[in-house]
Each structure stands twice: as C-alpha cells, then as structure tokens.
Image (cartoon, rainbow, N blue to C red; front, side):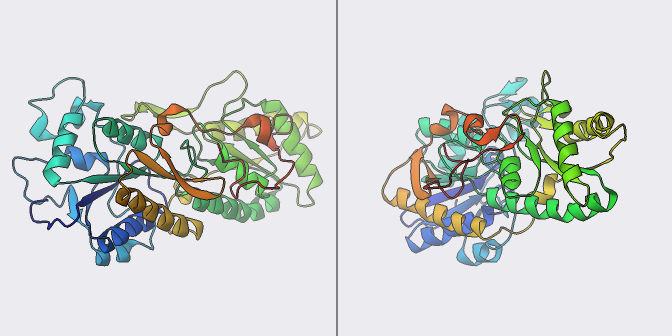
Length: 400
C-alpha cells in the first residue's frame, strides 16, 4: 500500500468461500508471527473480490478492499468466529459481466471474463511479496493458478466439509462436527417426546465426513452420504428397527446435503450457479423426511411414523471456534511463516497422519477428497464401518 513501511516484505492474507470458525485465529497467527519476524501484513477484504475491485488509477489506500493489519486488530478478532476480513465466492478467472467492477467494464465486456491480469497488477500495486489465501478447494484452486503465474503462495486449508485434498484436517471441521453432535442430541428430547423419526440435513456436497463422524460418535443411528446412492426403503426399514429398539421410540438419521437416492441425483435449492459453477444444494432432507413418513407403514404394522425434519445449515457455521479450531489455526499460521522464511512457495500447510506438514498446492486440484466407502461405510447398514483404531490418525476416516 502507498503508505506502508516495508521491512522484510509485505504479506497479504485473504479468506475465500464460506466462513467457518477458525479463520480469525488463523489470520491472527499469521499476522503476529509475521510482524515479529519483521514483515508487514495487509488484509485483503472479501477474498479474491478485494483484489479485483481495487482501482489503481484512484487508489491511495482503499479501506473497502484492504487494510494494514496490526497486533491490536488481530488480537481483538482472533478469538471469534467468522472472518473480520469478510469473504466471497469470487473466481477472478470467470467473472460474469454483471460482476465486473465498474471501472473495468469498458475493458471487459464479455458474458464471462478473465480478470487475472487485474489481480496480478493489483498484487503488484499493493506491494505484496507473499500471499496467504485461506480457503477451500475453490479458493485454493485459483491460488494454484496464481502460483503458476509467479505469485509466491502459501495456502491454508479451510472448509467444514473437510474435503480439501492433501490434508487430514481443514479449519472449521471440528467445530462443525461438534455442533452437529450437540444439536442432534438436543433435538432428541423432542423426537423422543413425540416418538418420531429425526431427520437432520448437514453440510457435505461431495464428501460425507460431517455426517459420518457424528454418527460414529453416537449422534445418529444411520447416515446417508454423497459417496453412496442409498435405497430409500432400506433406510426406512433400518430406522423403524432402530426406533422399535429404543425405549423412547425414536431414531435418528443424518443426511448429507449431497446425498442421492438410488437412480437419483443431487437436490438443488435453485438453478443459480456461483462463479465456480456450483448450484446451491438444499432439499434432500425434506425429500428423505417425506418419504420416510410415506414408507413407514410398510415396516410399522401399517401405522405411519411422523418425522421431525431439521436443516442445521448455518447453525454449524456460525459462532466461536472450538478448542481444535483455535489450536490448529495457530499451528497452520506459524507453518505458513516457516515456509515464507524458508523461501518455499506454492505450498499448502496441512495435517497428515496426525503430523503438521506441507504439500504442493497443486494437490488441491489433482483429486477429490471423499469418504473411502470400502473402508469406512457399511452400504448394507447405512452407517460407519470401522474395525480398529490402532495407529490410526486422530481424525480417522479423513486421511487420504
């Protein structure tokens, strides 16, 4: 930035995609370690959008797009959830004409536009020497593309779905699982009082970790995940059996938002797509709940079983981070600075087999991280499958 005093160099930080608990602690960790090592730090607002919207012709210091970070600023936010830098689902290489910043519309007028050239010029304009993006596979896939163009990238993985390849753990996952377990247990009192099925829809577009691990922890009787198309009749039969065996006469199923029935596809809330081509998921929990009610007489001596249907959605995304999502961001942030000091770029910090490490950022786009159904999912019983925990990593079922 125009008035920032450069020491060893300038580090830029941004957060992209959905917010999760753990982002602010990560920003804090990077900033404090960077300042102590002699670097200046700039926070980019609204993810990649902040690097698009800078007007180089008029800019001196643009608080709408970026801000200098200090220990005082990050200490104030570092214990809270969300991201004080704000976020967006912006993909600079695929910007629709309606999203092109006003000062660039005369230059970019196609229906879909690649504004990467502007991003690179704005990074140079800000004087950023190193860039630390914190995000999921979408945010980090664009970071990988910038690395190929010479930007010195150190990435930090985050996503509640825990589906970024190359790491056992992504920021936000522990808090998400903790909240799912807690909220599911809270809903048991109502399910039991009314002797119903409890159907809960949770996050998980392509990977079912957020349904699988809470079920393994005892939050639910069954779970259906994106990696296996399930039979609706079989699910109803199993839940009816579970309910009959419970003295309180209720049973619980966790439904990943990307789960699909046999012969079916994902259920979407609408047809609108974001810049990464994703449509908003939503509605599979409603479908499963309605079908359970319709099918239940077949397995309950002709009597219908009613359903409590709840979508947890943003309840597991909001609020403060749990212990894991307070500790791991601290470690990830310091790992990022270690790599900058060692001049190792194009890397993503990670947890692998319970140990902190780093991997090439290209791994993010090399494959999808999903549940290994053969190892961890019982297709017949629709629940987690595990035989031994001996020498397994802490987050069993989530390692590559």
